[in-house]
Image (cartoon, rainbow, N blue to C red; front, side, top):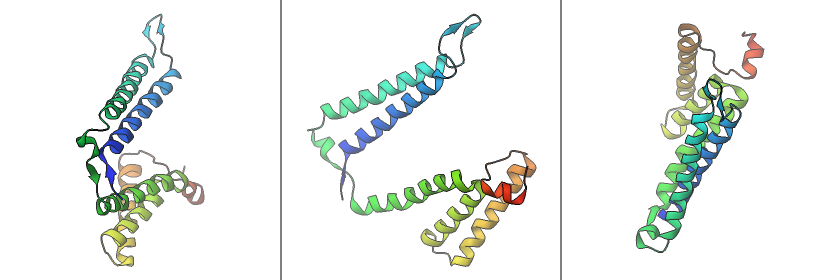
Length: 162
């Protein structure tokens, strides 16, 4: 599976446009008009979001205009590179999803276990130890030292935290 430069430019431009639209739409909740004491909180982020969205759309159009050029048709990623990239990206995406449902510390433990075991070639018990110890250190640093509570998911209810 070869990924062409044109495809990557369109994907990147689309992601940029989506980020701009999300930023602008989020700013709408804060108000984007000019109030009695000046601009409302969403005024600046709204227009920055629109500029970012316009830049993303412009980049996509530019890529499509140059679609037939040899530069756009060159291979961006070979099969082996794509698999290597996916082996990094998919566990990270799973980490984000697991963080939402199970909390930061459980997700971090599972992620570090998996990465140390599969990619770091650690033995399973050592990989699990790495994940657990690192999560405990994170808990001590954030929750105890800095007093910054992080999302704990169902673990918070089970342990009666907060």
